[in-house]
Image (tube, rainbow, N blue to C red; front, side, top):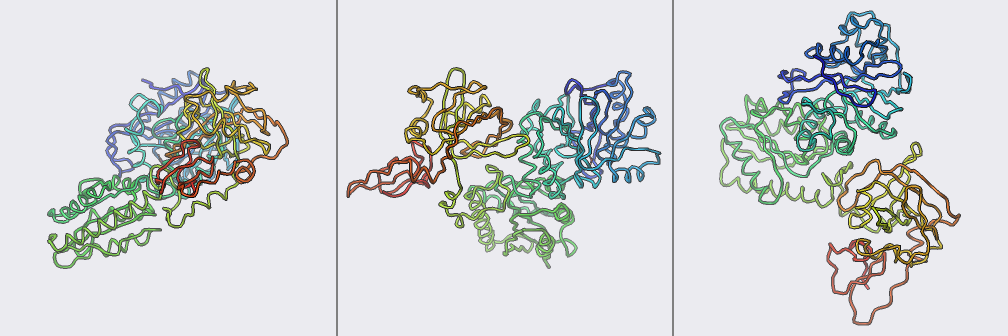
Length: 621
Ligand code: FEO
């Protein structure tokens, strides 16, 4: 009996789930099952995107037949030839002999290797399109994500990306189809990580390349070959792919993997973990003989610091630990801090061998001091473990301080705070803008300094907004905003009107002599500005104190030819100079708005009550 799911008016999921499979690709356990997705587009021409694994081919063929409802099948697009997506090809061609296969040249080579079929395919390459009536399908090559022939398809009509293996996850769909129908972060992100890191993890460069291509597209939906369809909150998965593809950790903390025959190496690992916890460092632990290597690979991509504790076995690394280490090297692990504990009753070699293997990986910083145990940890060696814990804890704290890890989704190698002069940030040529929003009958506005155009096609901008601003919450709720670009004639009163108090308890427009609104119904500032731009939010990213909103431009009006205000112009020509204090007065003045904090020292976490800038923007009176 068919079991299909409607995605849009003319797009249907015709895939199937498999919960009986023990090991995906013969290697990875899938206790939650796996879905093999296939999609049928019912345009003037009918188009099927990929097939499925042989284990579920019967259900798939029933689905295709039912969804076609008697229509002929015109095209089969083969995006990926791995048999979990192509195994039903032969049976499909027997049932639909007139279907035209669409694929690239590399796919054709693999098709002829896997099958003895006489297929007369339409061969496509990067940038080629296929018009099926209302829809235009654009082919984008994605080699090594995760085989060399892989391509993805962008439907520029409905703005859907058919992403092949990218953005997939282990786990059957269990009746849902869209990621927003489930608690993806809580229930599926671990499996998405395990899927990515083990299946595609080796090919981070190629994944980042594909993400770069995808960033130029207006994407409203992502349809992968495994797991859920994404139609909102794309940043949940894309932010992870950016980290994973760049081999950057998601969290600052320590993954400890140990191999222990009689519990003595485990004992040392437990003590180290306990010491780290006492220092406030997050830890996770795995026994490599119990936990499958794929779990440990996934955890190694997640955490910033890795500790490997292994007994010596047959003069080498313990077997299950060696498998994990080899797997990590094969999956191209990079940018991690590593510490090693070895054990050996008469000739400990495991530590040196682990070091040798991991040294082949890029930017792996291995702690020089290995803790070496002979049979069991002795009192005298507790200090060695404590020293290891100290170094790791300080290192993790430094990463936290530098802001890498989960919160910033940082893509670079961890920053060294001592190398960052805060004054350098003022060399950016910021503009100044009145950001306005509306929630119900309430209008509000604030001053921001970060608004830029990202792309011209589509016309898309970004703004960064401090969460302490009331306007921020309005934009989160409504998804709409205007920016009025201030020009050089702007008087200080505009900055006072919008910048130095909260709209939560005042009406910032109460004394305005104007009431101009844009087509979206929001107010804008018509005087002392040279332009008004309306934005409709299409995505947002949480960066701790601020949210970065990405928005389509829905309206833009030029209001004057005056030059835009820059930060420097504001400081030199608009902001009033602070009144000199009395001789004995001590304090700090906000360089942004002139607010004076009286006292001998300024708390590091002080936030200006007027303009919401931090202590770094204050200078002594
Ligand atoms: Fe789901 Fe690379 O196959």
